Image (cartoon, rainbow, N blue to C red; front, side, top):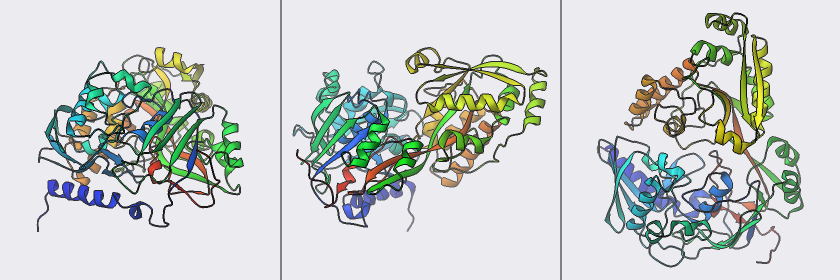
Length: 519
């Protein structure tokens, strides 16, 4: 029997739907237990619970509990069903049809149908709403409700990654009555189809949710209740986990990871990730419009030392592209190594035989940005490049430097696919083209890769794209960071996600060893 792509995509999604409906698939090792309250520590306030306007990881976690997407990402970065159980495309990858689960309900008991999904995406694509999802859900031209459980997306160009793109953190499905009515009401209230319902919300201190009895999977969530506690003091966060007052720390740094490692009753968590800090060049203005200068700076970087210095060893070497082994379609190109003599020669060719002095700007959050700037300053000195590091408050950096500066430090979570990170930062039409790099050959490689589902062809095209980035160096990417967290050993079913912004707490449960908590 011949299986074409459309049949394959459809049958795969259907199979995953069946598997996802069974807790034994995700948690094959042990049997989940029902009930209990999970206490989670966060290192930042949950300033926003509007699901289309979230920006940082604690906000992504909060809305993931309350809402659903059409699709979601497993910890292996595979696409699996969420509200949609199946999807298929036409041969040109320009028209996609999604099928919703039957009997979906919002938290207020109202049905969730394809009309709600259409209204949600109309809001996301409305520039007046200013949703971060607008540039991340794919080249959507039109969305139609074919019937109550069937949706049709028409795209402006072929796009193989649409199912993955619809798992984006700020593409949660909301009721049509809200999407076409009072959207601002979502800043303080919630009415999703997610595994938990909102009980209370204090942005700087605590958010509480309780189990949604009408969640589409009758087996999940296993927990009765989750409390998200905000801990601006990272030391206090770690101490609370050690004392057992907190069950799970969503994200920790290397120092706290090492403090917790080996402590009785605590499990540290670690996942290799495509999360990175980078040094961006304004490639449209002197002096960094000269690729020889950009490459000279890249050749001064000791990447092994950067991994040790910036990640305390909890990371991997970068090669001046945003793709590493954590992504699908990754294929390694020749690793760039430190070569001071080659850097000096390129500097001389670029017109700086006696060296050059430049200013590098870093935000104060996270601290890794300024650490990277200082390390680069020390490494570049030997080649005759004098770097003056300027650190500024994050709000000032966002307002005055980000996407505007000529030499500054960025920081990014791992994205769902190579296409997503390339289109976010490095194509000429990238939503956040920080470097103003405009390379038609690179754009064409990315465009061709998103227009095919052939794995070998996509790998070939993405490999060429990575090699071109390494050659032209619009940005130095010296290292990738692992995602780190920790939990008490009475928490089961939870895996840390390489994306850094996905949590899947509807799969977590508390064992009989957990302390009894009053609701």
